[in-house]
Image (tube, rainbow, N blue to C red; front, side):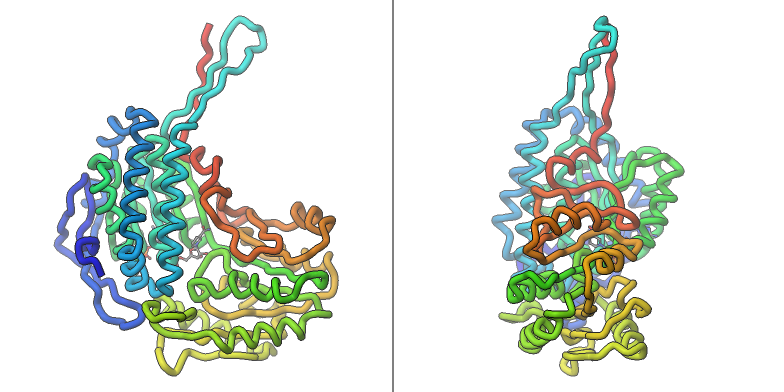
Length: 477
Ligand code: NAP
């Protein structure tokens, strides 16, 4: 590991800041300490907000070209250091190195994309009703943004927010997840090397998330909160943000349906299910959570999935050809155990796996459950582990109803060759994103986000920058 990128202090106003308290960051595979990191509290959060507020006075007045150039310099450094960043990510988060490399590139793509979008923050001139005035519309950065992110994509979730914020002219205070602050700190180090001015990016790792959350939401200097994480915490932050009427972007939990109709190429559908389900050992918000398979092809798909799942290798993310690695912590393991046990108690059958690995206490074996039904918790909650839960269905109307029977509405997947059905389901399925005949859908050029309790706002694409801009109307006579 490149030690010069392993930072352990908070990053405030361009300085590495030591705190009295520290907290442990452990490798989920070796379960050994990687490093102890500065544990920020209210004082450091307020210093970071002050630094971001001061930096906003100058950063918001830079030209779009200047901001674009700085973001591109940051992008270049991330790509130059991609292998080292990926190793840090795998060490603290656990995912296979190949996936970690994919995440660094994926996150970097947002930085490049928004470096380009910075140049396209256009206003408008609108005709006035009486023809006597001019209606001008300009766009301005919202101000300081508080960013709170989860551990499952410790680099990309930050890149996806910081890039549009900086491109718009905002400055940021970031609270990374306690399990995975090192990828964030390495990104901050590279931002310094890229010449992003002090105070524009501030980073406050902590073991007391709610303290930082309250400092950010109670400050009138912070004008926006961008959060990715669970719906439960998203609701807390939304209610706190109401106090100062801060704008919010909420990327929250999912419960993705994956529907396979009987008119598809079966091998293609099996590939799609595997890709969607097992990335990051099932710890993604867009993971196939409930897989509905048409009853006429159910058995064949179960057999093909079984062959694939049985051949998956488990182990450390740093080993070659490993696809299933440790879950983030013991709580993650406990949740998967509870969901599988209660499904079994209600009649689900374990076809493969179904246990914690006997080689490692934080790896859950890749698992297939059949005969899953709607009275089981596993069909209602986000699994966040490598468990495929399979449900047969017989007709389109009922499967759409079942797919929509959740408060979440992030991603959905539909495999079908029928273009009329694609048109119908495009409208009927209640989710922010649908993959038709595709199991991996997210990229920087597409709008990522959910409906219902999966959140509000969109990240990436030409829409992603608007959350960081205020529209101002000028009536000119
Ligand atoms: P989480 O418990 O909600 O935590 C997310 C972040 O919020 C972490 O940084 C956490 O800090 C912080 N946090 C927790 N309580 C807080 C509070 N009271 N005030 C302020 N911050 C607080 O979620 P998670 O378990 O890390 O991540 C998994 C969830 O994220 C899943 O539901 C998944 O679907 C969702 N997710 C959604 C998307 C999307 O784009 N929609 C993407 C990825 C993940 P600590 O780390 O210190 O607890």
